[in-house]
Image (cartoon, rainbow, N blue to C red; front, top):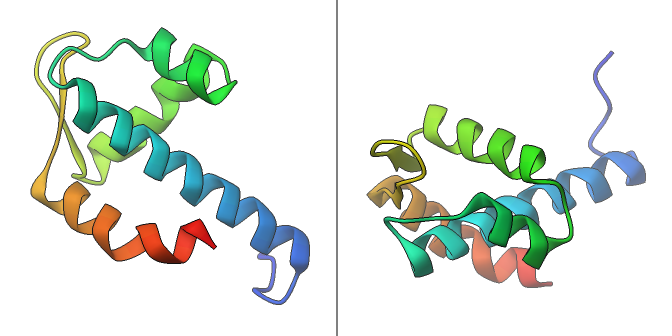
Length: 91
């Protein structure tokens, strides 16, 4: 059951997800390597569990590297993604 790109709800949810990923990448970049998921969650108004899941996905996609517990760094791939998507996500 794949939603079409023309579905407005699909587009809104996808945009929200992408904006969240951008915010998390920026927060990690600003505070790396010691990143507190609780602080990111508070800034974004979501649960720490949601942040944990986003970070896990970003690590799996190679945009963030995990260095021990609670230590993360944005990779070159993550930086490139932010630069490529920041302007379009702002609108």
